[in-house]
Image 1 (cartoon, rainbow, N blue to C red):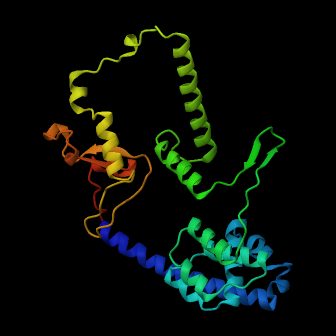
Image 2 (image 1 turned 120 degrees about the vertical axis):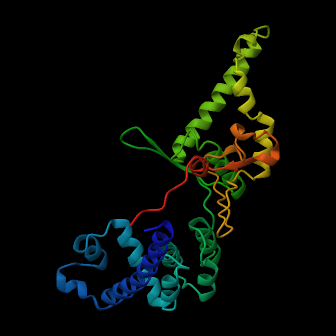
Image 3 (image 1 turned 90 degrees about the vertical axis):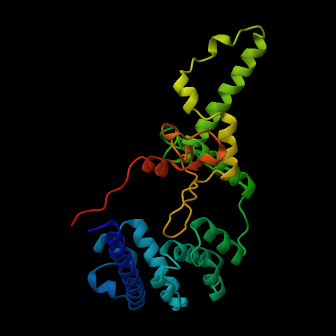
Length: 293
């Protein structure tokens, strides 16, 4: 099986999954309405999904909430099958609708089509006029860990999101605790180093200079060039799929790369440099073979 055949088969399976998901949601809505789960010994649909059918708590919650949305907006089922709305989005609508006691509108669902989780939360909050929460909650837990809940403005979150992307080499999982601790560590080290230099103004820094072999100098890209390429690319991967014309756009583990390798005569001229995410930079060095039947 070639890669192209593998992708075609996979996309067909995705279409089947979406059709089945629609049918599942319609059945969940019907079973909950007629309370057929009682005949099986369950006190609710959630218990039937988790204990009877083995769904995880999260999977059961999303499906049940989405099914309840279908009860008040049956036309949403078509959008689920088409793939323009997903379970996570419908669960968010159901949650906020229940909190505000307001019904979702067709206009809201139209705005939510193909939107990300973050965009969905924002659109739903605006549609239901949910007031932003600004209070900070700090709680020490029994294992001495601290749970911190904090609200960022859009500008503040964009700044920390950018920092997370820049630190993706060091914090590959992107876990927020790791990111904030790394930022705190770096600032502390920088601050302490600056204070140390103030205390010792005559200290020589020549000993800190690292020797770089000639080959390394030829291959290395100056920091100024790296900054130029990073800004030019907007901090996002510039790899473009030749078939679809789609740009990757990932900000994960960005790396400045030579388009024409140095070993083949490539230079550090900006025209020969590009920004790639870690995955595309690693994949550049080898061709992925087609699968054999």
